[in-house]
Length: 363
Image 1 (cartoon, rainbow, N blue to C red):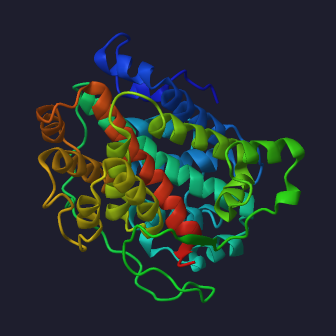
Image 2 (image 1 turned 180 degrees about the vertical axis):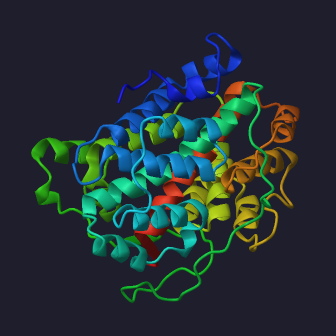
């Protein structure tokens, strides 16, 4: 595969030197490692999950997101037979991750194992679907920022459902409502034991503080993708200037409310509360019930930000020029809007991994 320098810039038709290009240059780490994640996912390190299969899944996921330019890009590299005994369950898994990750259970992973998928390939498949979910949303946001058209979506922008089972699959006490409490997370697919990583691989895990985490050692079954994903995360959330960090965390929390991810929301609501010093507003957001609008009873600025993040988080995305105009009215410039878009889009990726590879529990 011949990798382009920046596939999102090409598909969003971003001209060098334009305001959007300048904003992305300012966020060069996020730009570089989003492209690096793309390259890592399609730089085949395992023969079992073939290139044609990866392109087939990616093209389908992009199409489900109404990201027609991106779907055509992936389809152009050649597609595997979607009706094959091996790819059929993979596409069913991809549909689940795309449209309703909160409905995932261990049985979805067991179905892939029964069809001959190894743990490493399942992790790569989950990363690919989650990444294209992120990539599709980021592309939509970039095109709108750049004055280009995007496909319409009539999906209601409201809070999603979440897990209400009192016990996890292993019998631990599970959270049944959104909370700022610190939670644990247990995998449904075995994490890779630390001893099975090479010393160099262990050093990569240690660099990011991932050594003792079941979640990250599970994702470490494809370490190049995990490394690029982590660097993308840091480039989006930990860079100076632009949108205040509290409001980036707010976007992550809003996305997690749309997707029903109690674990991700607990982490990022807590950070929003700590950084904004507005615990009441954060608790108001967490208390929103399924089918309700997330931004009610918030300040005008947070309303505009939550509405935009939520619209970007539904499937297919429903972000429009009107959302950006409301952000403009609240004083958000191009860089700040890019920060908001990237923060919400990234949690299309994070939520889908957390919800479909395991579940949270109360420590």
